[in-house]
Length: 514
Ligand SMILES: Cc1cc2nc3c(=O)[nH]c(=O)nc-3n(C[C@H](O)[C@H](O)[C@H](O)COP(=O)(O)O)c2cc1C
Image (cartoon, rainbow, N blue to C red; front, top):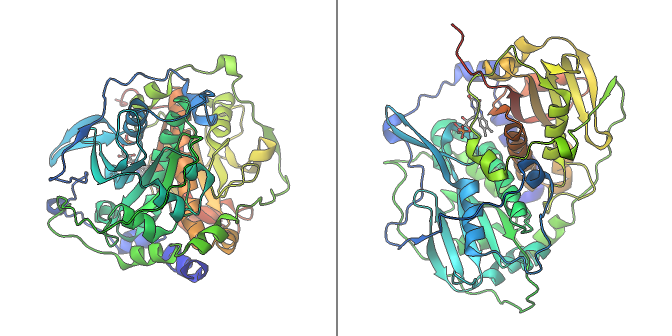
């Protein structure tokens, strides 16, 4: 089984680290003339337009992020309006901006380089206003395209070995990653980006589903080849990353999997030519689950990792009480989100604001690789620059104790500039949140698939941090980092861990300084 040969993940992870010298020794010039198309277009399939006048849910963003379902709708079967809302607020176009080479269509969730390599598909049984089928969602015209007609939920039940949420859902969204669209800029690191960019999108998807009264869950345990075949993917270019069952039905009909012949559907080429990065294909292959037995065994791996003992000075977190939390709806917050391009260095945030962000972003994440009562796969380490009530310094977030443990007091803006790939953003922010993991422990437990899980979890919590920050009218941005220097900075506490993700939070600079 590929999944157990974890040296393959180490090869990929170590081979794609950023360092001071790697950045200088391997400059990568962007080939603008060969820039990939940001949409997957099936020119020969008629669009099925999704409704655009979808009523908003009106649920406050902070609540939508952290509570898994917002009503006890007995049916919990999504309507076309629900699906339109979920797809649009996960991956729809929310803003556009002209640049010398054309137009950038910004989407609902943050994405490295605004390259939008994550595609969404829908597998549904018959709904009131949508016939059962396998569909592709195109954000460019907010429409679905029918790839296979009929009810193929039995295929997903088989591929996930009757994962309960998938088996009980009337509709499941499948997220895929398109290598070239991101690798054009980020080369072999794209496989890490798949987890990050899929994760930020999932944060929106889970929040909008919850606010629509529909349960949703991230499912990572499936036979890769079966799902890829169902979507008719050319797996040298595009692969399935995760499934998100939406809603719940009491229907108990046994759905047999159907034959899924190759479709060979025409799509518009992304670029004149594509460059293949073998390290990416190799990492995906290494983390693929090959049989139903392997999936069933993998799913039993959810675990509770023990929390480390508290050693340093501890600061208790106090999230804003419910009555004092901002009430802007999840839709309003998603529409106004956009990565902050300059933070106000003179500004500060309150400890209550930071507490609220950490609390809502890390609470109640539903995924088949997480034990609902257990620890998450990523540990959060912070550099606080200007948080009222918190000494500037380096901290470790003890989630189950709801405290920040001081690791090292001091002013670390210059250090943050360096760790965040020599960018101003992490130095100007009020606080930087680093995601670190004990990759040895994760791979030992989950095999190479654990690498996908840890990246995806980081992206999802990161996406929730974006939303929790913007719901309080703060700003945030995802960032890249020098892997080993991050670990060294947080050591000895972080010794042996690996750097996974970085996000800066602060107040956007309103006016450029004179
Ligand atoms: C995981 C992640 C890493 C990112 N890294 C950087 C970065 O290193 N520097 C930067 O300026 N922006 C970074 N960004 C911000 C993206 O450029 C931004 O999300 C993208 O342009 C889309 O714009 P929007 O977030 O405003 O919608 C990152 C975003 C994500 C999600």
